[in-house]
Image (cartoon, rainbow, N blue to C red; front, side, top):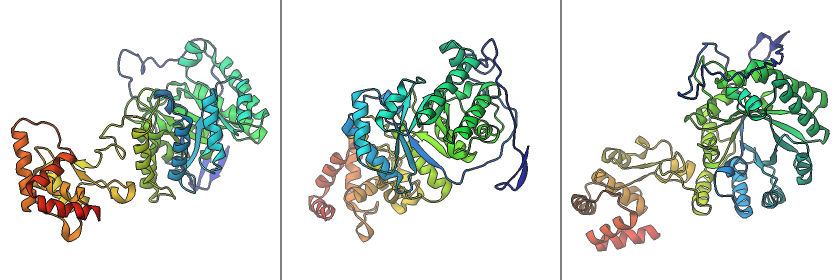
Length: 464
């Protein structure tokens, strides 16, 4: 079947059919995943076209997948974070949905309190096992969409579920149909898709889901789950690990519309952000994330990273309030007790802090030289300098200006006598054997000891 594609203005061979390959022995791709070695990245040098959708957005799994890796949140904490998610996503709902567990009393309490807020975004969805009895929980919760686990690799079908591919597909389709019969929108979680036989199981199953959706008029979402973080975005990478190959195949061959495609990645091989961005580029409207990237093992895709990536790709925030990223980080660290690496991009305490003297000298002249963007304006996080044995006069001057809020003509340069006096004391401490960074309170004391009269003036300036 040939169709004229209005986006590419080309005649495209649009209709391909793939039949289920119901093999007797599992295809475990042992030439790639031999377990005793690092998984291999193979190439076939086949390229698929970039096909970014008209709309792209994020969804959140902090209260589902994310919460499985940390101490459980209280209902009060979930409600507060849910409000921050709404504020971050803005009026256009770029944080489109947030998924919840519905199994415990605490889960349901949190869900009900978030529903009572009456916020348009994020829409509350749920996650259930592939079990028809769980649909009663979904209906009772008043949730219109639920995720359903439909594991698609032979690792899961043969080794975990002890089924054949045909049996697994039959069970999955029965569960999805049952959800539709109850008026629930299904979101099918294709677990372990980056180890699955794409043409022998993934596409035939996705095509059946498309047919069910067409017959019922109920949209069926497909979430491509890179459960083990095996996905790669290199041009010409081969399936089953190619992110762009997976997205293109689901969109082009199985005809799943971009708005019904979602990517869910894990960070086992440090690729989670680039893979999510690649999914957007090649036709997936939605990427599933969690706050700070919390989640199983190495975690999910950090939602704050994709919020920044959205503006980088689109040139606009789309109505998001990116300063909320800082609010979220502070709340999760101080209130919930999640430890954030000081150097974690955008949220770590030191992500825009420099220690090198030569960098501090550049920052003193113009912060744009060494700051990645206007972090004060965008994230409400002014760039700072940590003072240690390598910071030099410029580092002390920059710290003093930042700590006391000195701007314009009030800023001190590295030749200021107060700066020199503080630097002498700092050098003396490190000469005596100190090997840790100076804290703000310590440096403030050194300023006072160097020139008490000027210190009092600086303190008054800071309070103003």
